[in-house]
Length: 560
Image (cartoon, rainbow, N blue to C red; front, side, top):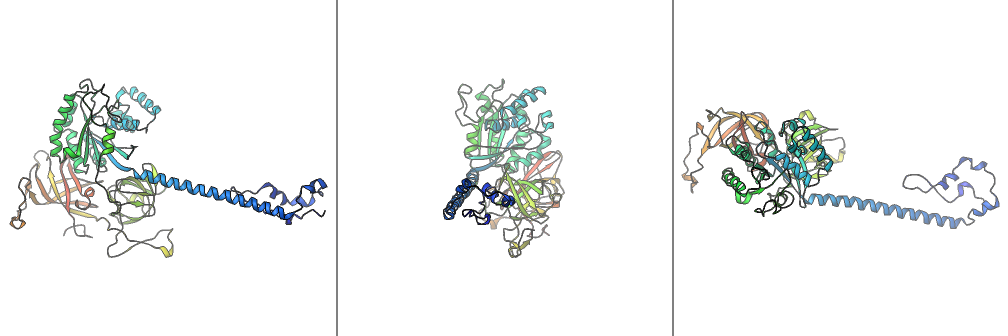
């Protein structure tokens, strides 16, 4: 009996393991029925350690080993977190480009986009087989590749793109967002929405006999799309001559050269530097020829240039300022456990927890989360197409064309309160000046083609397309007609004061004042080019392109 130890004196506190459970031996000692157990026999008492000091040492050693294991696991968890952060950084090292596919209806834009996704591993074979069967059932066997981009049933039935399709793929150095713009003239406003988000344009031209001519002739969408792309800030253009495998073409060099010779003068007249900013190449979008890998000589012996992936990967675009004021035109919004807005960040960077303004209604908001390329990220920089979840504003209070903007910092501080803000850490925001809201502005316009018998004068009404804004407008005053042929005077003092023109004709360049009914958020072209260039359309036709040259004084929506 001298070896029996009371239960409370046993030197083994319950050891905690990771799942919060205790070891079995500690549970036995805590058993309330232990007092009723019979006395242990001599054989059993021999198993009890007669030296408590040794038992203590063993237990301490066991606890130390447990602590070491826990420490190793913690370090491993930290290492895994660091590895994830490094992966994020590696991901962010890749530059991001937005590529819009433009061109005449049925040139093969959706097919080219679908083929790119297939070649880059974004679509599996089973999905392709399903689309092939679906297209065959509709007696449209060659449309199956377009189904990858055209997900809408209406688009598949009609065989034309209606909305701007969106998808993502990557090369070794670049992350791309594909914007598949509709080619039909009825959906040009949707094409403008897509092109306004793009950095690079891929102009798809059909080499099939008669199809190129239809798109290029007066009224064809090839011409209008090029002019709109340049106006909307698409500075680099890749002209892909598609359907080179067609029986009427058969990879003919003569046909390729004919198309190039007709397009070059038109691209120059639209403002493109053909040597620096434009590249031509032949492809077959349906079969993927000259897209991911270079053309085989057995298919086309005269082409020795790069393939489409190489061209896109090597395109250089002007750098953007990640530290500038935040400007994100909102193209769409929806509810998903909060208010989510979609758009392209034109300037600055957005991070989780940032406090911003939705203009022009001046709603103070907090960024809850950011989704980029279907992945949740903590921070997104300029050029990224993102979805941002906001607190502080209702979905019905936001319209397409509103702008997510930095908070005012000039002259005062803006105070924003949120439920998770402590008293000592009130959110006083010091950031760049927010975007202004105006109802009129001065613009420099180039008149492209007025409707029959129309005169461009004060009182002319049209639909204004500027970034994601679509708004009815009126030209209230013509200020000056610019003579593009006359050389600039060396001495500005010799410049004579010009009379304000009463009207202008096709091809004229004029400075005028434009007025809209609702407040809109725009910038001067010299400050933010993407928020300062626009088009004027009327009755389904683009009549003029222009840029904002002057805005009313800060804080005032009008000049008066």
